[in-house]
Length: 177
Length: 351
Image (cartoon, rainbow over the protein chains, first blue to last red):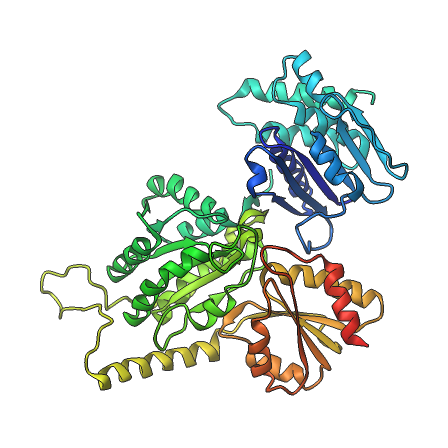
């Protein structure tokens, strides 16, 4: 399980989540790459980023067949649902995507991340809630390492944001989808 | 936390340039290169340098000429259409024998083209960046660590050979992040810049930086002298990397981002029992002619893979003196191939 695709609207923190994963890989001394979509889709349409965390040198940084797909809007759901590999994992923000996957050969987790964020005073942190849920689903990385990297990735000038990020990660991790 | 930092290719080039002593940066924004200018604008004022957004690409390259003439380490960066605009200035810089570093984070063309990754400026970079008898040293990094290392190397090569050096990257390398360790830069011995125009209060003979020679014999002599330097560059500065070429029957030749995708394809081919290998030129000028020619003695066929309609294929044919067949596979206009597409081509040719 090495190929990850994070997809949603620009401004949802898609690129930040991807970077968080890449940094976790870096701390584990893995080969990592992070490639954003940088086309017109960045300006209001679907934004996505490819992240690869691998033991082997990475070839193409573009993930076309993700092992794990995180989806934060309907256009991305419709665009990428069919690209997930067999037995892959899909994490869906069910407060923004009402659809359920028709695929029976993948494992889908539905978590109302955006709703959980607004209900818990975690505005703008649906991406981290989603990340928490992914962390539990993939069982690849140590929770405390991810938490440490998350705190480290939060601007020093905003110490309160680090606490909110930790809360969002835990909320997503412990949510029973 | 790790000593390595996660950085975009564009940022890694900028950081490596500052660490290499680049004091002046002149640019003009263009996707997918803009993060480089942005990084310079943010960092240079705090690190003893200057970053200036010029009024155009043409202005930027001429500022590079002036700064270089005064002896500073200087860089400019752009993407394909912007590099075309710099063409005149680049030729003047070559004609004036000035060192500098020029970064091209290529996007699809011709014209304004698109903004996605491409390698369709290969001909321009290796043959015709400007008018006149001229070359630039052209370096093609394939990962972000190499973006950083080759940037440092580019400044050294420029100073040693008094020539502009181009970093030829693409939108994917510019935009993607990978871990970088900046401690890894090799050190070279550099000549003193005795030719600079930096003010001397009549303590030495006057230096003139100029690319105009009205007397044909004088200009001819200048060009001959410059080509002697090119000869030395061709003899000593060729860089390439090979993967599984020892027993290869089919060798894929690819540089930059494409080389990484080709490497995966070579692994897939090997898993099917096809004896495939990869030759990755790191210097596009000087092109690894000798090595490819030697490879041609034992390889059955070459496959050139690029993000264009087929440009490097000509250089491979020349290098191997058409001893073996050379085929091209490419995607263009900003499309990146998946490894399976390259594998299909390897399979077809291996039959």
